[in-house]
Image (cartoon, rainbow, N blue to C red; front, side, top):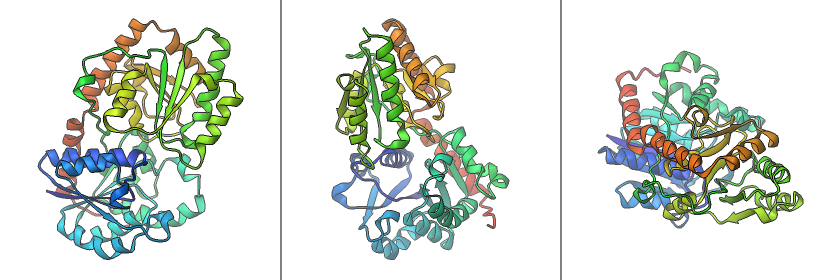
Length: 387
């Protein structure tokens, strides 16, 4: 089977797409598929994950960006993507609201190719409230493609619900399949080594207003004010977006907790996994997530996690592998307090359960099997619905 992934961009400083798409492509390649990734960007700005999968046999084709860059337009993709689409059996579109998705979807339908769409968080109601007018116009194309897709890949129950809320999707509910993203921690981290900084929290991801870092800093300030002897420290690691890093640094200073917060440059590969292994707990204070890859990575590395209920991780509580909080500073402070007051041996036991959960439910091999099943099931009943 020949599969073409189309994604707006895989930049070196990218977020979830730069991790998820190469991981899916590599997993399918190991299943014997011939996989190509088409993206807008330059070869010298590709994410390390994209470079890594190239070495493993996945073909990555870049198209030079053109104006208007906001929608990731590319004249070269406009001219040349058709040839790639015709060479493949399945076209998988990752994301919405961008030219590569619109053009790739149009070509897949025109050439009679099997079409799979992964909204990748773009249908989150919180996201839809931003740039509402522009997205209402763009949705004419995106929703048309969703309704024509042979399969829609949701990464969680929440994302499936958002997708079914799109006009016309309720009647196609059986086309929307849940396949969690897969993660694979290096074997060296799977032996259960204890954290070198057991009282530290690690935020790993984009530094963006949606991620709730302002709430997290306020929560940490509340915790420290109520627990003067607390040794909890927070490391924030990730690429800056929309100038958010400066405002977060300033907030830490205003709250009087600058000495408790470290800012770390973005890391990838083994350096990322070492940073996770050094932490006592991974934290994601997001205001909305379709998946939250950082939580999965923390669990795979044997670390408990803290996240808001706006993230699709209710199993943190049900499996005893972390703490949930409402989307407010006070609730997050209580979760931080619960982490800080837990004996180290209890946290170690949670870490063991976390790793076992990740191995059982979040492995890349499990993801590959589920993606293959989704594609095979879709190809067995290619009944494209009329928009």
